[in-house]
Image (cartoon, rainbow, N blue to C red; front, side):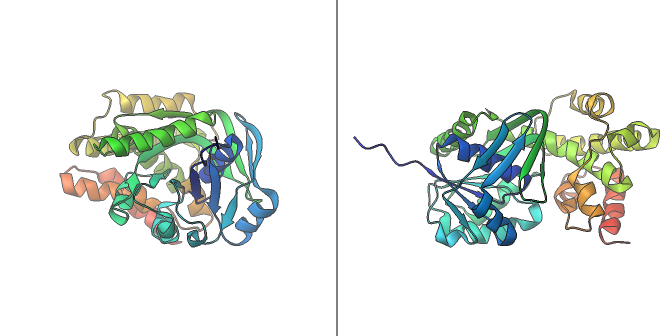
Length: 316
């Protein structure tokens, strides 16, 4: 009897997180892996493979079956991992449209609270999950990915109640778990996503506004107080929206940053503003302020930070 064909999986957006996941999937051999990458990045993948240098997983070089500039050449995919910045989601959605059938599973592995909902609106006939990943992984100048530290874990789930959709997303979570990644299914993915989102709204904002790191926050009582206020405001908005959040979450997150986090830790928002790159400010504080307006929750510190960061991003 012939072996059944491997499921077709595509990673769309192969930077830090996409590089990590593509390398792990490629090494596992459980799927026929394709990636969407353009220009010099695509050429590097064709020539050198997808390279991951990891404190947890070691050095991996994965050779995808295809490196495509346009999803139209790939054909229908069983699984698509969307790993782009929020401001690139609409563009990558156009790229993957030809790859999507009614049973294709889409999994955004992105910052913020909106990517899953945006993909559900764009692709109402697809199966769309949600996820959140905790890792220190960066994209290197040679287009490899570098994972640092002793932890990388991921939560996967779905807001859908349809059992067929849930089982399809659970199957993808199992494929990711079988790569060696600590991938955990959760029945309350909204809570998991919001818990990281709250952290990002605070830590990314303070580090970006002051172009500092964890050590700089620890050393300045004003910055530390503003960090806590930002955590509290985001928590209040999530609670007002009906998200189930642990009662001690803010104290735990604050202690984690002030007492435990590496002093040199910083954020993608800080790096993007410093480099004059597009930012995810609207995916963080912009989205929070919109939700605060909808719920009537006061968020004065978040509003002040949003305006200051918008001016910084504009070079003012």
